[in-house]
Image 1: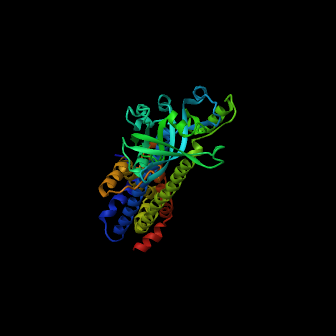
Image 2: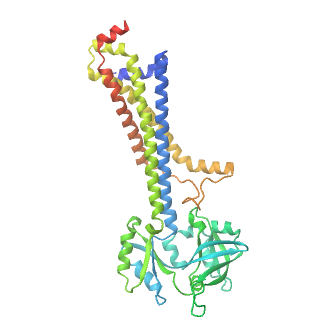
Image 3: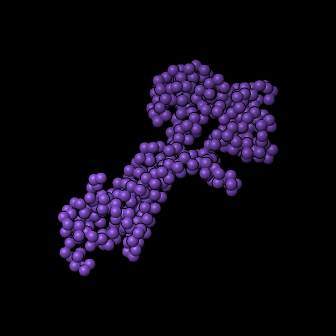
Amino acid sequence: MFKPLPAFIGLRYAGAQRSEENSAGLVSFISGLSMIGLILGVALMIVVMSVMNGFDRELRERILGIMPHATLYNASPDINWTQVREHVAAAPGITAAAEVWQVNGLARNGLEVTPLLVQGVNPQTIVNVSTIGEFLQPDSFAALTSDPAEPGIILGKGIADKLEIAVGEQLSVIVPQNGTSETAGRTSAQLAGFRVVDIFHSGTALDHSLALVDWAQAKSLAGGAGGAGVQMRMQDMLGSFSVFRQVMGQMPEQGYYGSDWTGTHGNLYQAIQMSRNLVSLLVFLIIAIAAFNVVSTLVMVVIDKHGDIAILRTMGASTREILLTFVSQGALVGLIGVLVGGVLGVIGSLLVTDAVSGLESLFGIQFLKSDVYPVDYLPSELQWGDVALVVGAGFLLSLIATLYPALQASRVQPAAALRQDF
C-alpha cells in the first residue's frame, strides 16, 4: 500500500519512541506530558464554554421567561389598563402583553421580616408573558381569589424559607404609604393579611424577591396610586429596547415611562458575556501552552535523530520531505490530543450538571445559591460549534508549534551530523 514517505517516517518516529531507551524515553515522557496537557486544556475549554452557554440560556429562557422583556407604566389614576394592554399587544414586535400592578413591601411572619416585590396579576393574561405558571400548581392562580375574606399570595421559595412559612399559613404584607394632607407628610403603612396558596421554586434570584397576588389586592395595597403598568413579551429579545421605544412613542396619552430587560438584567447579561470571554481566553492560553510543549518534544527528537536525518538526506530526501516528516510527528500528537480532549469535553459538558448536583447531595452543601448567583445550580448547554472551534484551534496551534523544530531538522547538514555520530 502506498504511503507518503514523510508521513510514514514521522509516524514511525512517533510510534517507536516508547520502545527505545535513554534519550528516546525522555522524549516519549515529554511527548506524553504535552499530549495530556492538550487533552486537559481542550476538555476544560469545552466544559467551560458549555457552562457559560448554560448561564446565558438560563438568563434568556428562565429568568427572562418569568420576568417581562419590558414594562410600561403611567402614574395617572384614570388609565384603562385593559385598553392599554390590548393596544400594546397589537404593536409590531410584541407577541403578548399583560397588565400588572407592582408594589414594594415587607412580608412578616412572626418575628421574621423580609423585603419583597408584590406583583398584582391578571391570571388570564399573565401566563402569556411569563412562564411562572410552569412552577405553580394548576389551581394556584384561582386560589388567589377563591376566598374574598382571606386573599391568597404566591411566594418564592427563598422568601418562604426566610420567613419559615409553608403553604396554607398566614403572613402579613406591609406597604409604606405616602403622606396625606391629614398626616402632614408623615409616612404611614398599609397592612394586609394573606394566606400562602403556593410556593414556587424557579431556581433563580426571583425566588428571593417575587410574590404574586390578585390585581385588585395589589391595587388596594398601593392605595390606588402608582405601580400599575403593562408587561410585554417581544419576538426579538435582543432588540427589545428599540421596540419598547416605538411602543412608547405610539401611546395616545402622555406620561408613560418604563424600562426593558436591559435596564433590569442588562448588567447580569454583560457579566455573563464578559466572564465567558475572560475564562475562554485563560483556558485558550492553557491550550496554547500545551500545544507549544510539542516544540520541546520535537526539538529533542531532532537532536536525537541527527544521524537518521543525515542518512535520509544522503539517500535523496529533500528539505521539504524532512520538514514534513517532523510536522507529521507533531501533527499526530496534536490530533490525538485534541480528539481525546474533545471527546472528554463533550462527556464532561453532558454530565457536569448532574455531577455537581450529586456532589451537593453527597456532601450536603450548595455551591451556587440563587440569592448570590443567577441560578442555584450549574447549567450546561453543549454547542457543537464550540466543540469544532476548540478542537480546530487546538490542532492548528499544534501544527504551528511543529514548524520551528521541523525547520531546524530540514537544515541539518548531513556531513556534520555523520561526523558527530562517528
